[in-house]
Length: 191
Ligand code: URA
Image: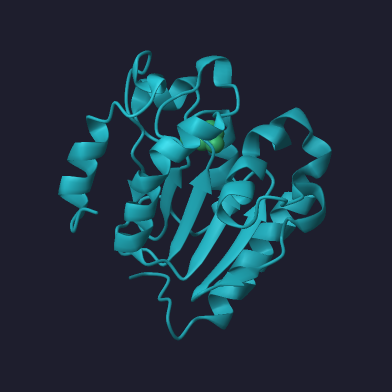
C-alpha cells in the first residue's frame, strides 16, 4: 500500500506482475482529480488507450465524455480500469490478470476515498459490485457497500455496437446525477 499518488503511480508504471506487460506501449494508470468523490472503473485499455496512456480516449471515451455532461474527466471525477495494460485483441482480461492488477485499483480507491463508484460494463461490475452481476437487468441500480454507493452502467463500447441501448445508458447517468445531488452535503461538484 502506497501512501501517496506519486509513489503509487511510479510503481504501477513499472509493474510486471502479469504477462500483459510484455506487449504494452503504456500502462494506463488512470486520470482525473485525486480528490474526486465520483470514481469510474472500466475494464481495461484498448488500442488508443494503450498508445496514449489514458483511459477511455477512443470512440467509446468520446461517448462517455458526452454522457458525463458537466462532470469533466480531469476536474471532478477519477477514471481507472480493472487492468492497467491492454489485453491482446481487446479480449476480456483473464481472472489471473485481474487478480494481479487489483492491488493497484485497491490502492487508488483507498487514496481517493470515493463516495460513488460507477462501473463501466459487466467485467467491472462483476469484479467490484458482485460476481453474479447481470448488467442488462441491474444497470442503473445503486448498491451500498460500506460507505460507498456503487452502480454499473452499460459499457460505452457496447453502446457503439448496439446504439438502441443508448437511452437506457443515458438514464443511468441521470440517476448518477440524482445520487450526486442527494449526497450534495458531502460532494461539491466544483471541488
Ligand atoms: N474500455 C475500457 O474498459 N477502458 C478503457 O480505458 C478503454 C476502453
